[in-house]
Length: 243
Image (cartoon, rainbow, N blue to C red; front, side, top):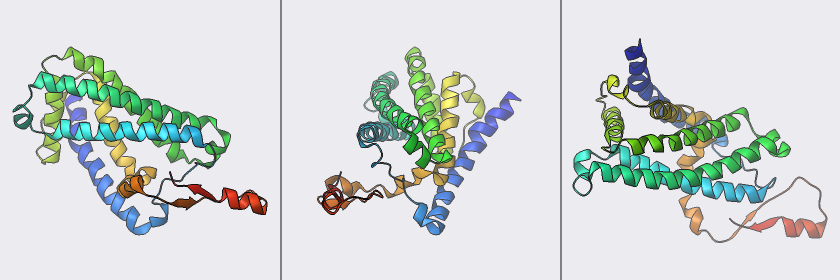
């Protein structure tokens, strides 16, 4: 029973999630382009959004790059310059810093969504579910750090990287090799794959359209409010510097 469960979760489930991730994104882009966005609530509570969003996005970008490079770089490549224990220590330190930054930012965003009545009314169940899953995933990811420190030889890291590379190359490893990992690693893997699964059905799809050019943009953006303002107030409030 245990072998069957691990085979379903770590051999079949990854491909199910990746298929939904790729084809779901394509179908949504083709059929529902007007929903291809992350609806802004900036006008409702700007300061907490700005701080939380910046911390979250900086942290999550580092985590995504770190996980991608760390898991998918073949052992024979990085051992040309690093030993396995050295790579693991770099991953622990860098991941811990980026994870903490991301966790603080996401906590601010989640608090804002849950406890501001106006923002709560503009949020969908999927918005709240995505933030909740991401927050849980980050918490468990930080929880794996003490366990990683206990694996001085980097054995757990090697097991995870071989599993990820096997999935990517369509040569999945025997799921039994993951049974020796502690529970935070296993939950972290399953939740990570689940995020790929729900990606096309949530606001996360805006990642595909990330406007990198926006960072260097100059100019102004028009921001309109539904409140009735006087002519002078309306003119002063309708244009704000782009952020």
